[in-house]
Image (cartoon, rainbow, N blue to C red; front, side):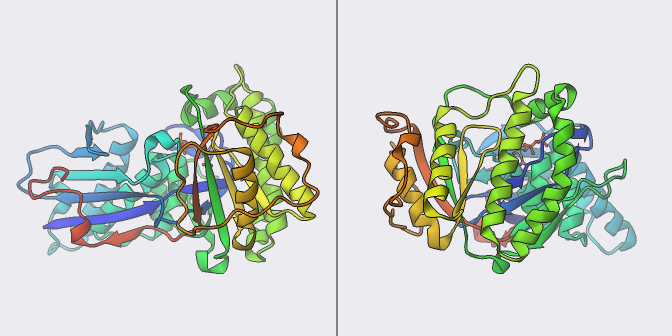
Length: 391
Ligand code: DP6
């Protein structure tokens, strides 16, 4: 049986990708940089199988639901490119089984609810690409595979590595130099923690894909941002290599605010932050001020959820303020069982609106840390049964 099961991590950017210069190839208007989160806590798992006896045509299931694979759609393009790379190997070596000619069955599963509002496209696409690369025994490096994952969803290319990852915008028209590479490994700076605050949101927001296109078409502020990001990429890479949390945090918060500013400068404007998100910003700023040093950094993607980066030694203080001002309705996920610490003495509680936030304005917390890249799993973890449909 020819099958491979792989899991891949979620990543959260510190320097945001927002804007495409080529929408078909998914080439960005700027480089970006992210931290890969631990797959022990958040992951997508994908099983890919080929079999000569399968009925013609590829089939794919996401979280148990069958999806149609359009040939020129994002998934279809990723599958086609990886199949081509397999074909090249088969042409070079005639003793290889002709896996590239056989129908595929693919099942993918996220261990976190889509309702949590966490982007699943990055980990999902990365798991798909990594599992097909394993199944086809491709010789390409993770950076080369990132060229394919990028065409599934831009941010997915960064999930092919663990640790601290840059997606270089590249300059070639064919996109062959727009790829991800590791800036530092998890082991280089293992103390990094992430606290995801799942903020309640009933509205269906603007998707990243359409939102960023609107920004490219209408925002004048984006041009300013594009002048600033290259310097920020350099600086933040230095802070990671020297484990300089204060400056890492400063740049991370500044870039999140810059990204949400260009959203506001888009016509019609895009609002991803809600009042709870903004209150989290004020609380973290005040925590940093009253601590006499920067111990936490907030960042927000295309939605109201906050991700707060902090070091292991300070995460108890972050939990302290979040739990005090944003009581959660649902049980939180904390594999570290960290205790909340008291507020710093000089913390000015007036930064939070009078009466505080009602229970559930932050639904739940997920406490995790920096993690490794895609993992190959054993047969017992397969998502497909003998017939090649999800178990
Ligand atoms: C705000 O990667 O989801 O999370 O390439 O159109 O699939 P597409 O967009 P996507 O955009 C992610 C945007 C972001 C910032 C980031 O992750 O860098």
